[in-house]
Image 1 (cartoon, rainbow, N blue to C red):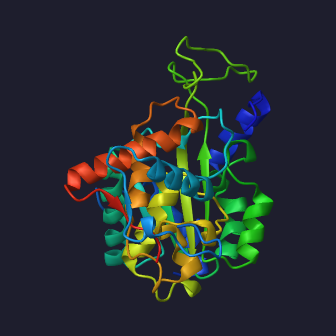
Image 2 (cartoon, rainbow, N blue to C red; image 1 turned 90 degrees about the vertical axis):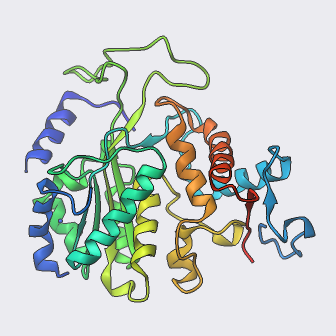
Length: 326
């Protein structure tokens, strides 16, 4: 993500001031300012016996570290090693558009519970949405409308984690879910750039494991194609969205190379085969990144996820074992 020029900042301000069925979806985006609905890797060889009943992580066993790190490489977005982790720092405000009211409440409440579980606060009533779940029968057409009528939801390229052409390619391919995030760089003084686009503040906190900047998400969107989610449960919709809203999963995942189950496989394995809810791995990933300091670099994620899983096991008082795919 490049530094912003004054022209970029002006464009961003301009776009911010100017997403059921296709015709009603654009109008439904007025909800953005309304109250929230609710406050062993497959290689062709036989899997070793060691993995058949799960992985003990008590004592930080090396085998557990290895498997978790391997799966993290396959599941999370490949941001630069020395970039900071994009995530929410402000309280979460979820809005669901395009679903019946009771379904919207169910999805919102479930995402909110996940946010609370990882330590993120929830916004107060009448909040402006920063996490948006949209279900529409023509996501491609809606996206093009947003580009012209609600550009602030799509954002400018400098603040978005995926290029417009890539989003269009995914929509043209009729992916069941398309996601994007808007974020910026901030520091301890709350601002990073002056009117000319130059950095105006630094911090002596910077080190080899922490940056003097952090990257807060300002808006995260999951856009579902309603024609392709017929057999998906509300719980699966909510949990799949939660991982994308709160974390930074890889856009294209080779699940043949992933040993642990994840709700991210929902549209690859199908709703009947994919997990019915967030898995141990999903929860450990989200909990791990939300326990890191604001300026933590990507290189610290594996250790944080291991710690998050160990904490999860301790809280649940179970045998602290991670199940692998069968």
